Image 1 (cartoon, one colour):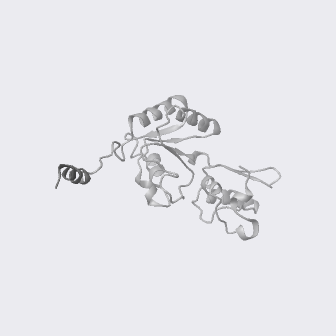
Image 2 (cartoon, helix red, strand yellow):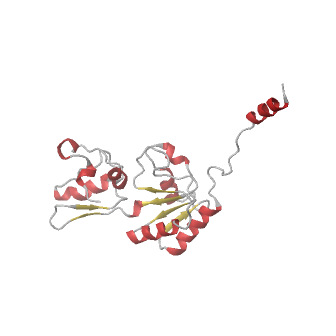
Image 3 (cartoon, one colour):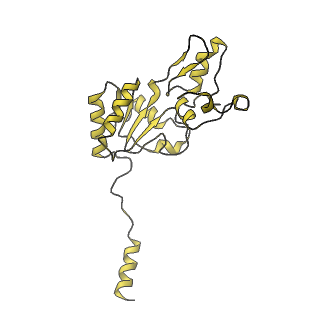
Length: 196
């Protein structure tokens, strides 16, 4: 065996060692979380200090697909209005290498769509209101509401929405992904019945 072949054989058996350790947020991600906390009034739960708090734990682990719960967000932020979301995004623009995800109900089975490992998780859970227009022809649903929240709020008015088929599915994710409803055969997809 020649020297080149021996070297090639040795190189092929050395495993790749990643530079980023899964489950441990980078210093840059933690810096991003710190800046979000300084520039907003949102509730923020950061790793590792808050990893056992109910808010952090629920945001990190409550998913339809358990594959999404494997990640460890550097922090979870809970905006309460559109201005909070705007400020959070403005901070993200200064940290282009930091990953982030937005979570409505956490029903999407694709890892990374509503979860992040080492990045910032924006939980829309505090934006969960359901309001009915004065003429009762439109409902205004917050992106963090679940379909159970929306249907329960409209039930006293003998109204419903073309929404998710399971109660804990989030409004935001289902509408962005088009979704299916029990009423789709009659009224079309949920996204066809919304004005975003």
